[in-house]
Length: 137
Image (cartoon, rainbow, N blue to C red; front, side, top):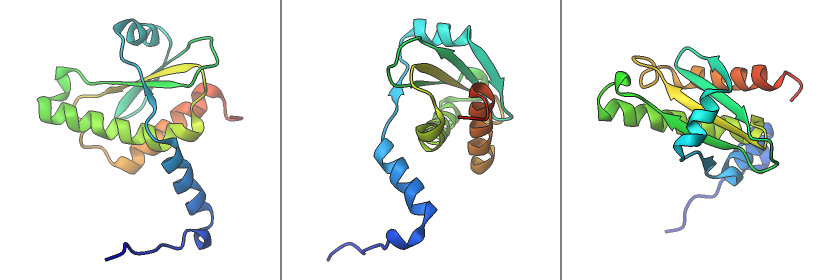
């Protein structure tokens, strides 16, 4: 049985954004403690469900994203759910709006990240990146 065919060409702008998201794939991940600490010393942009920390590395390499949730967020199930949601909004929004050479860390908030409206979280991240880099990005 063959998979169903979809007509992406007739969907306009939606098809372009889907193509951009699919071609982006996984972002580079911040893994070292020193990089997390450096991002914590950079700019901080609060959002209702999470906190964005950003630091320019000073090189022209690709942007990197880190995710963290403390035990204040909840048990392991809630922390993992919160990080999954943060990874997904980063994948959807940062492909087009993050800048090369920057490190971003998304920090989960207790009682908010795991349960907040997903579309509102995506809009909050977009707004935070625009504020961070200026509206002319």
